[in-house]
Length: 372
Image 1: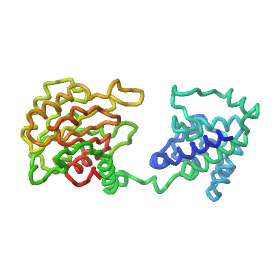
Image 2 (image 1 turned 90 degrees about the vertical axis):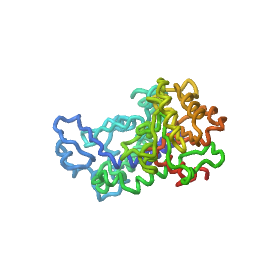
Image 3 (image 1 turned 180 degrees about the vertical axis):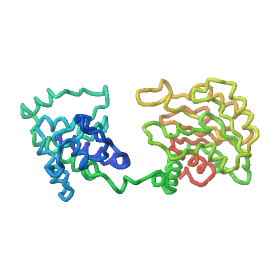
Image 4 (image 1 turned 30 degrees about the vertical axis):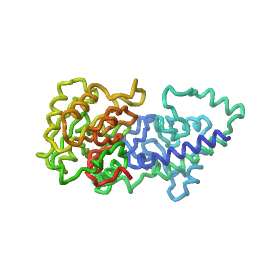
């Protein structure tokens, strides 16, 4: 029982954590068991959907909106055979066409009590779960309890009745000014100040009129959202943000590298030249998901390719403050910059999101204090 309670708790927790994802999406009801249904529906209890299945929705209490969710969930579970109940527990819920319950594929989100993350554990076919019930190791009443709680959450989330308050949401609702401001705030608050010699940061507006923005991530966009990310409203790269702050003519840009692999040393020289024209240099370096990701472990903690050489050459030839910004999820060895007095400040920004460039600029320009 303790294990069942743990599974139930984890399942409900995962439901809550992904509630926003469910509500803002339009999941497809998979009624492929029936050749009569051709239309796509976004919630279960739609009269036309039941008609297409040859069913009368009025006969199914779980679709009666006037009833409490607990009563509706019990009605639904009571209609299922033991085999059908077990079929709804996995990450791929089989659905039950005879009562209008569609298939639903949740993959690894554990929303139905079982999670399959791939080759990380042992998962059994129906033989093993069936044997546990036949031998009394798991009671059918325990399965009923798990399913009822899971369906109650689905009722609350609009899976069965729809969510009118969310169905009309458009881009303007998602990309509102308050959401944009929140993305900037999150990016700024995620920046970690690692070094700030002689109070270089924030940059002195009276002394710094022109800046150079260089490095493989100087004009980063998609890199900033990492992976497992949604569709951004609009990117603001570090280059974008500094151009907005100083004006296009006062920002000198040279990537120094084609990408984080940074295999072309010939690109280092233009970045060095750009840095000589500025009152301050912002080097945006680091790694990305081509180096670190799920199923992609790093072999070391070093910056790839010629990134160290880029930092070193700019440090040798620039006479103005140098700020190094690192984009990465995992740790990166930046001891060369930490121990170099010519590198005045170092910031770690992680993968700061679609407005990451603005968040980084706000820290460097003093609109947000990363030292607090």
